[in-house]
View 1: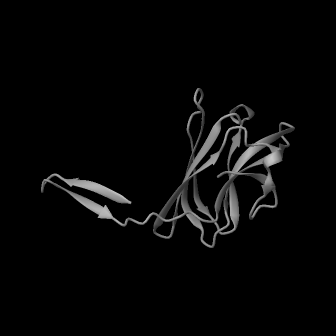
View 2: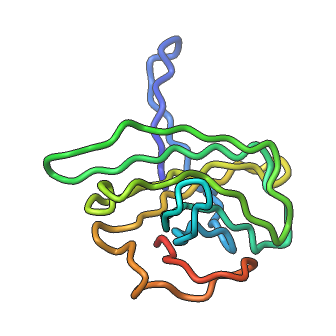
View 3: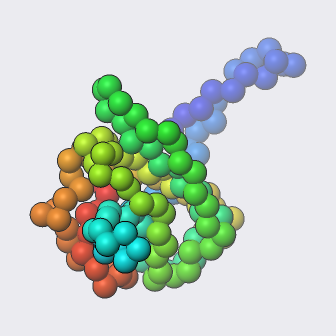
Length: 145
């Protein structure tokens, strides 16, 4: 990847090559259908899963649903720490937004390195027929890509 920057004091452009953007591995976002005891309903909840060898620090997640006509408000979530081989609930996902493409932009640190990845649960993909066994969790759910 090449970036160009302008140095106004010297009046020239400089190129920055070989900036390394680390690949996100062993981190997942998944939708799981769970029973809600309070409301006696089966609801879809979205989780982040850390199946990697390192804890995730300062995890920031921005979620949004959209298509050509509709969109949801952006939701922001944060976790100080997501330990190794663990998971955390991000949010409840309401039935009416299952028809939208749902995006989860996840940013976090491992040590001093910043990582980020955009996960997508495509429109109409969140359904029990698409559920698979999930890493770390003893549950089945729909994995975001």
